[in-house]
Amino acid sequence: MSYSPQVERALLVCLEAHYGQFRKGGEGAHYSVHPIHMALILSRLRVREEVVQAALLHDVVEDCEGWTLERVESDFGSEVAGMVDSLSEDKSKTWEERKRWGVEHVSQMTDDCVVIKAADKLHNLESLAAQLAQAPDVEEIWRHFTGGRERTLVMNRELVTALQVRIPEELAAELGQALQRVEELA
Image 1 (cartoon, one colour):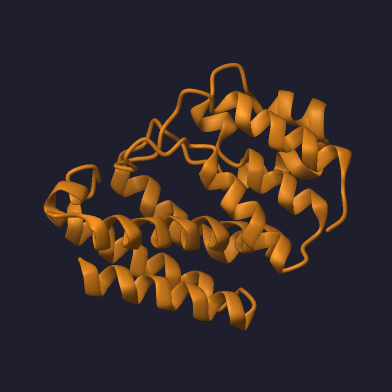
Image 2 (cartoon, one colour):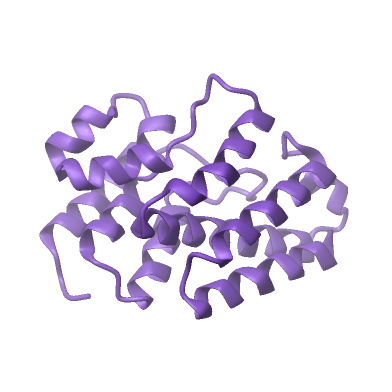
């Protein structure tokens, strides 16, 4: 993808909105690294720039003060806002309800949203595998997860299975490999 002012704007919003937020158990990793990795994965797949924008902004509404779907729509348009909406979890629900909804929602998502969700899960699994591989005590890593080890692994398996039938083969293979690595290290 060549330079795009809207992608750059989404990148800047991502950095500013997530400023001061850190990844779960990530030893100080800034949260914005996650959506940037997603954008890199998606750019490699040569997706449209609106998809990259939505990936960069996918968590701003649910995790960042001052960001609403209306603001995303005003700044980035209805298509990007619609993707962000489709990818946002309802934080008023329990962990189990949110994760179950995420798995069930895959069948109703647009192709663009499914690819974004797959990039999200791929980066999360790769990050988790790296943490588990480096941890002197893997139990310390799992303490950061609301679902604990077993429930988190089950939900990851279910989500990966749901995603793999809807995404390009290369991405599906990478997702399967990342999940397998996490399971081996768990």
